[in-house]
Length: 60
Image 1 (cartoon, one colour):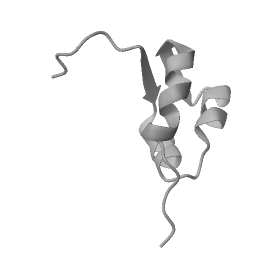
Image 2 (cartoon, rainbow, N blue to C red):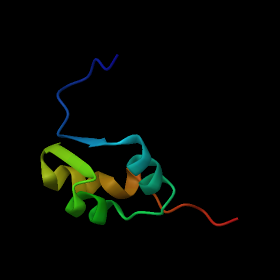
Image 3 (tube, rainbow, N blue to C red):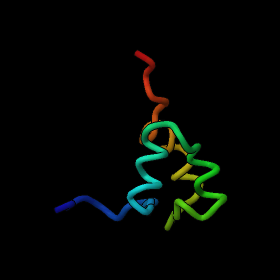
Image 4 (tube, rainbow, N blue to C red):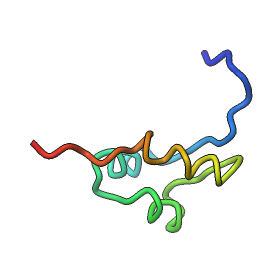
């Protein structure tokens, strides 16, 4: 379990929407606007971390 301080922002998804975002098949901003991704807490903090959490998939 997490034992650090309070999170600035948390993300929640349905499993299938998370997979789409993680695989680069859905843009995180579009997912948020469509309601597929919900953010609790600071929206500005969430925007700072989105590229780190959901980097563009590498092309092999």
